Each structure stands twice: as C-alpha cells, then as structure tokens.
Image (tube, rainbow, N blue to C red; front, side, top):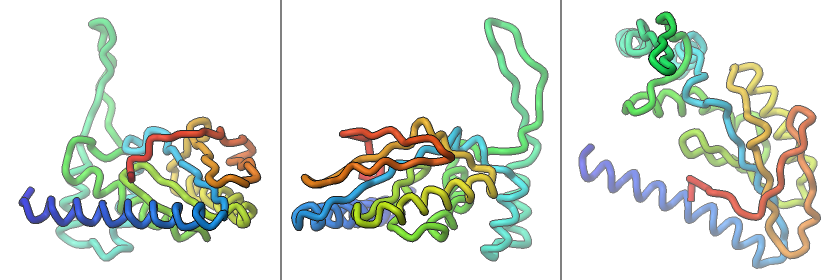
Length: 197
C-alpha cells in the first residue's frame, strides 16, 4: 500500500470517528438521550453467498472482465476440517470472501453496502461492525429499523447473531428502551468495543 493511500484512509477514518463522537456529544451535552445498537453478523466473512455477490457487483456496474476475474477469484476454492489428525473430505466453498486478502473485505463491504438503505436512522459500517443510533425519542423508529434489518438479512442470507447484538444507552435521563430483533430482546451494555472508534 502506498503511503499516500494509507494516509488518506487514516484521515477518512478519523473524520468518520470525529463525526460520530461529535453527534453523540452534541446530544448528550444538550440533555438529549440517545441509543446505539451494535449489530453482529453471524460469521460475516464466511457467509457471503457468491451468486448473490455477483448479482450485486453487476448491479453496481462491475461487469465484463472484472466480474469474470472476481468470479475466478472466488471459484474453485475447497476446504477440509482436521481434528486430532483426522481429516474430512474436501468440500467446495460456495460462500464467503477470503479473509487476509485485500479483495475479501472490499467484496464484503460491497455486499452489505445497501444495508443503510433499509433504515431511517444513522448507520455506520466499519468492516463487519455495524451500528445504528438515534435519539431515544425515535425509539419506535429504531425498532422499525431493526425489523427492516432482520428482513434484509433474510433476503440477502446474511444472518445477524442476535445474541451478540447489543444496546447502549447514552444520557442522564435515558428511558432505557428495550429493543428486539426476531422477537429476541437485545442485551443492554454499559461499554462496548467500537471498532469504528
């Protein structure tokens, strides 16, 4: 990676972090409580279905030789499991993007890029970590967003690990609304590792 590219990416990331922190701080400083929902995809990078990814790439205008190259990059991959010296048969890999590659995370982001289109509140995506947040006065809209996200996850076969999705409440007079996804109440936490920050 060229130094200029790294610097540009770092600056872009810092600007996004600054935006989120300023948003949260402005609301809390003005005694407006807000809630943040931290979403967790179940085995995110392993679950991206290749056929649906190619469909999205084509819809974004990635066609011809480039689409063929990406298809080849994802094709003819096999895996096996080894436990205590015993090995399974080799199986073809029909989903997932290779972690540890440069292209894998980019393909993942392209695949989930339309996720913010189904919600009404602010959505921030950093790799496979996604969060939505809004003032608690919009708790019904937050819940509606969670319902829409669950429908999106079913449609695109990118399930959320609902047991690992979390709610964090900010502000002194926060009413601590509870939120659900697929009829499961989300865990409330007082601290969370935020990879976007």
